[in-house]
Image (tube, rainbow, N blue to C red; front, side):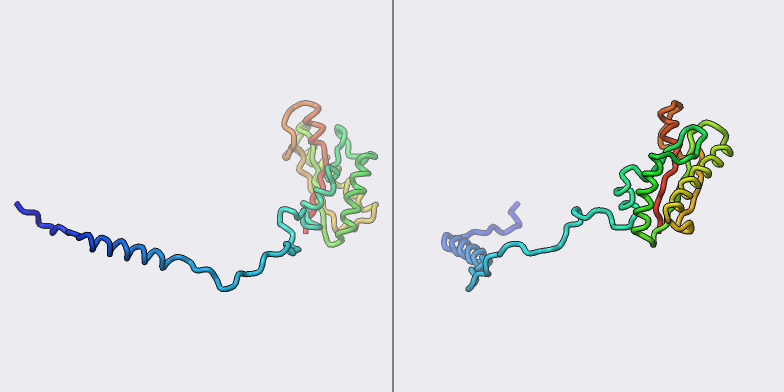
Length: 178
């Protein structure tokens, strides 16, 4: 049986021509030097700030939290809602921020530890939040800018049934809102 595909035979001259045509095609793709080179780049003169260099947006909750460095939360003794000297300092810092951003409002969240009934802890959390609010108002913050809410024992930050966990959960937390 004979082969049905034709066999291609190149002569030495045909091979040379094919090689020359390939080299010519490749050389046509090579870039040519420009007639004039662009000027050397100078020193960078950009004044744009990189996003990673930016801190929190001024007047935002992130700004409030960053400036408070822990002073956004005050702590209470068992079954108490009185404002002590440490709490007064924290609330004074909060009031200073709120005065700077007079268009911002705040919510004070009252919290309790796990002991006691749900109803008792909701009432105690409300008294804690109101005590913090009243102190802010005494420092010159308009009462209409501050709301309160009690979560009682429903939102603990520390899990556990010991004094260390309970102490962390007896708190009032200030959160800013628009």
